[in-house]
Image 1: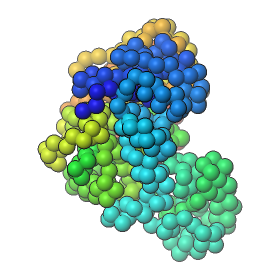
Image 2: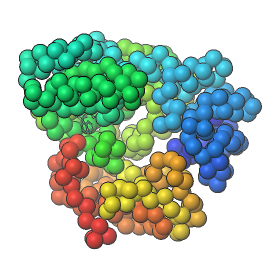
Image 3: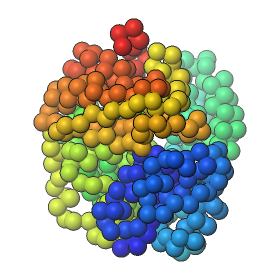
Image 4: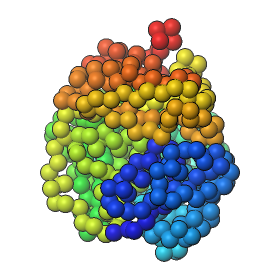
Length: 451
Ligand code: MV4
């Protein structure tokens, strides 16, 4: 097992990894920017190293400074968390070249899944259902037009280097395709340095359902069930749950087996997620594979009882996953709300102020993963997530009620937060009935006067 892990991240995920290390008897090293000197990850890790100024480019993305910190502290592995360097293929390879284990896939795997058109072809070859569309990259606008005419509108153009919703264009009419093709192409060229596009049939009003996977270096891959992630705003998830209200035991088995087949095909090791679109007929299609621990891994932990971060670390240390993971059943229902320092009454504008006073909710089935404390000044340089509030209950209705109670007990004075937004969302009858898709938040109206 590793003796010492450097955590190349900040905030709640840095604390999450420190806690996993502590339970595994592994020493932890925090790295921090000048803006994070008073952040809890620097206090709770066994050691802490300053890696540069507040700006992420000069600190949490500074690969040289991070590798130097790992070398001077004698860390034998680096955990990248999510965001920052988590899916940076060059950094993964640099770690390896320095004799440090990167707790994530190697650079080749990150690139293979980061190129969305090639990832799709790989999954298709493994028997995973994919959305009908172009085979690989489009060669010309004429190819796109002919394909769209053949399969019928609407279609969607996607940047192969995009992902997470960046560089996409939905095309409803043949007269729009050439302009939207050119726009998507130039936009992805300047944003990603890669202007490759592919085309798919556009699935209207799908759900976003993803499967959590763990793979070991002995070729075993297990599904930890699904997460319902359809409640998103501008491709940012706000609330996630497990299980999904629309996934039956038989669909769970099918989606789990497809995801496992895809991950086995690429000999996947560690924690990973396969994202699917689920259409209204119950057909599911591969969308993307994420090669990192995700924010919402917690809801899968609650319903499986598995510590996914500890298992992820063990997988990269060469430990074999236990065979019982092949017959996991989901227990009860879990929901996560992302508590962001944003004003939901003002278009989710960031609200990075001093936390003047703070009270965390508690009680049975309530978990708060957070790095904030009373007196904490939220830095302006990083993302706005302050906390993840996670509940676990016997069933979905009880989980929703438990979440509303916990949200009402959660007191954050200083910044505006998404807490009142979540309360209104969970009081919405369509949400309570499970009748929602990825477009739900486009028409949901939050009423700030009800706070
Ligand atoms: C789609 C789609 C409909 N049809 N592909 C958005 C993020 C990126 N991972 C792919 N996305 C979509 N791809 C086809 N063929 C609809 C979306 C989509 C979406 C997907 C998941 C969650 C929220 C979404 C919001 C808008 C569009």
